Every structure is written in structure tokens, then in C-alpha cells.
Length: 193
Image 1: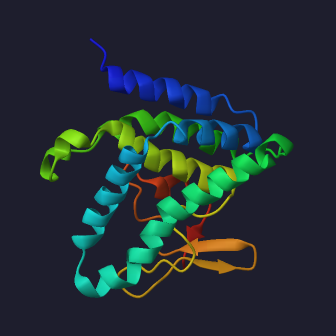
Image 2 (image 1 turned 135 degrees about the vertical axis):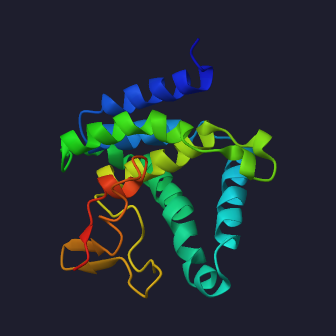
């Protein structure tokens, strides 16, 4: 028997994978993001805040705004560009179509890979909420060609995501290889030296 939530996610991912270029992908992602209710966005924001609050205080204070920008700053930029008609005018090719398609293949398993029982009120959290994260990352990394984590985002040890000229560098880019559902494995940033 197939999980109906997984089937919905697979159908959405099928739409993503069918995108011919960046403008198509931006439109598809925006169409899907607009289906999230205000309550669902509040749940996603609440979960993000819970994750941030679990971090050590000295790091939490440095990273809070970057996590929010990664999710909700990108959400705002996506919808602004969608509503302005920018995606209808864009037929730019993907930077790496093969990488994009492998990202799409990862999403359903990534959405289902979490044990939600450890969270307060797990009954209001579902794989659809995790999909939101992957949709936003698809937009950021494959439409905008930006790193999955915002420039300036600090990591333990004092290193940050950097932009040098036209290139992006991340201190954890290659450190997530064993985590199949990590967006880092698909990020356009290069590993910091």
C-alpha cells in the first residue's frame, strides 16, 4: 500500500523534474508554495524556531537571522519574482541539469527520512512541511544559482559561507556527503579551502 502523502510529494517532484528551464522551475515552485496555508507557514516557522532554540546560545544568536533568511527570505524573493512575471520571461538553462534531476530524485526519500516523534506536537508536522524546505532550496540553488545557505551564514569554528567574485564557498559543502537528504550535496557553492 502506498503512503498517500508520499504519493502527493512524488507527483509534485514529477512536476519539478519536468521543468525545461529556470523560469519553468520558478513557476512550478511558486505554484506549489502558494498552496501552503498561513497555518502551515506558521508551523514551519515554529519548527524552525524550535530547531534554532536547540542550538548553544552563543551560536544561536549568530545564526538565527541566517536560518530565517534561508527559508523565509527566499520565500519572499520567490513570490515577489513570480508575481512580477519574471519567470515567464526567463528561459535560462539550468547550470547542471543532471544535478537538478538527482536533487528531484532525492526529495521524496528526504521528506520521509525524519522521526517527527521527538518534536513537541508531532501530529501537526508532516512530510509536506519538509517538502517546503526542499522547494525553497530548489528555487534558491537551481533558479537563482545561490548557495543553499545564505552568504555570511556562520558555522561552528568561525567559518562562513562566502562570495568571492562570482563564486560561492561553504565550509560544510563537502562534509554532508553521508547524509543523502542534505541540500549541501546539490549546492552550487564550492568547499572552502
